[in-house]
Each structure stands twice: as structure tokens, then as C-alpha cells.
Image (cartoon, rainbow, N blue to C red):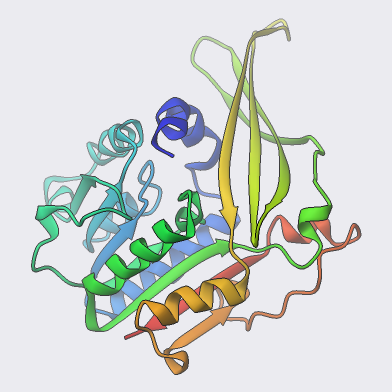
Length: 278
């Protein structure tokens, strides 16, 4: 997991690290819950700082936990634009969310703990996922809230590999070059786990329209069905009555149909938003 994001670094941030309508929706939820739960936030898998840096800019005390040192450096560079008071609200720790908790977190608790943008599914095994959720619950304050945002596939998704190349973000670069992203997804079944690969292509195009550099990055993730994720949460100590599953960030109840060719576009946007209380 570390190697793929250390390699991606700046390319990942350019492709996914800035605000989009979907990103604005998740950020609005995290900001609201942070204000409702004491304004102390732990972000598990904080990446390049898309969430933790703007939360700190609003005076919310936020700690980011991120394994990739390249991602941490990018987030720290973004944080350099904060005022001194805002910067004092932010702490980023280079550590594994599924490993032994770092000493900096000893004795601490947080009103809100989040795993944004399928960060939990970047782990390689369900054992690692369980350990990360255990860590999150251990650091959650007594009246705190845990939010896990996972992407969703329905029954039949593994049998229908996408493989369709989609045009992504286009970014103007200094000197007149353009960075054009494309992406496609592939899925396969391993036991009771669906494994996914996102192929992210990055073409650097000069002002004559010629591709002068072509890069390919492969992002590997697992998929957990709702019943699998619920089992992990219950095993971590969350009671059934304190676990809620939404289908979007506005609190709409989860009610996703089976995956079909006709609704495949919907599934690239479908979410499992888990909201859990101790």
C-alpha cells in the first residue's frame, strides 16, 4: 500500500486531491459532525490533506494518520499556507492506521474519527481492516462518532469488469503543458473478497498537442460488501443499534440495487457511508 502511493504522490493529488461536488459533500458532513462532537477529529488515511487541512483552517483540531511519506509531504506543503493559529490545529503523523498506535496518540480521544474516500479499503487484508477499526474505536471518545466512507458494488459486480477508459481531470501545468488523466477499473474475485484495480493514466501534453510523457499507476483496493463491513464493526465492539448505513453523505438510507450493465455508471458513484456511535 505504501509503495503505490509513494509512487503516485503529486499525480494522485492532482487527480483526486482538489474539491469536486462529491468531495464537497463528504467534507460538509465531516465539518458538521466535527462541530457537533467537540471539534476534535482523527482522520485515518489523511492522504494529501484534502480534508484535514481545510478543517484546521476552520479552527478544528485535527490529527491525520497517513502511511505514505510522499502523501504526508504534500499535505504538509499545503498546511504551510495556513496561519500560525490554523497550523496549530493540525497534526499529521506518518504511521500505519492498522498497526500499533503511535506514541503521539497515547491517552488521546477524539469526538470524530473518519476513514474518508474508501481509505479503509486501501488495506490489503480483512485482518488489517479489523485492526484499523479496532484502533479507531479505541481512540473514539465516549460520545464520539465514527464515519467510514467505502465505495459500493452490488451483486454481480465482480463478473462485469469495467475496462472502459474514462477521461478524467485535465490540469494546466507551468510552462504551457497540460496533464490529462484517464482511468479505468477492473474487478476480480478472491474467495469472498472482491479485489479492484484502478488504472490511472497520466499524459503530459505539450502546447503542440503532442504527448511527451505517458505514465501509468495501478491503485489496488479491496471491496467489502455491507454484511462484511457490518460484521467487522460488531466484532470491534459497536452494537447493532449504534451502527447506521447511509447511501450518501446527506443521510439517505442505503438501498442500492444489484449491479447491472445498465446502472454501471451509478456504481462508480455509489457509497456505503457508515455512521457508528460507541
